[in-house]
Image (cartoon, rainbow, N blue to C red):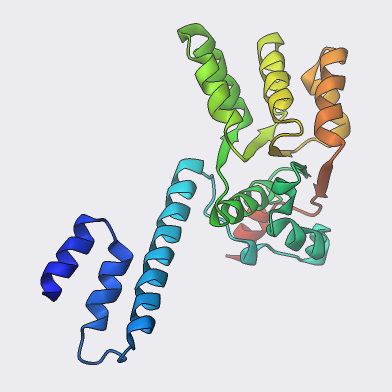
Length: 243
């Protein structure tokens, strides 16, 4: 009978429950009362589904780094506010539809912090997508040519959190400027965005170009944004020197 029950659980895709029931049959298992056993099976199924959901969200996000909040280096030379980072880790900024702007010179760990917050958001069940800014603009340009632009824009719009990394490595042309305007417009007051850039926010105006559009984009981005400015030398250089 137990074999049949296990098989039925498998067919119903109750994988967490199936594993838990199987382990409860072992001679070394705790002896449960009926209600404890039901609670144990339900909890196991719940946990299994949560874990698979987080794995799926993390896979779809395509982060650059497998980053975790616990591994962020709060060395005084980096000028990071530990309380601020920990507050952002609870992802309330996503509920409040706020943005995060991370700036600092090359290699100081901007992408790592952006990815760590993104991973945290996935673990809380939010839909996240990570892009290198130049790659995203290339994809959008190509999609304009092959007619899939709207599909791409809709995909971005559905994300609770969009992470744009390495923003501002090159100035935007008219097509990219309008694409960025559309993305920011869609997300403004609806969803959050994290932008990481080597350039200070004051220099973004020039990178975006065309004053009216740059004003409109920055006005929407900056007005409810948390700012993280990382100081200090390149973490990559530091790690090399330590080896």
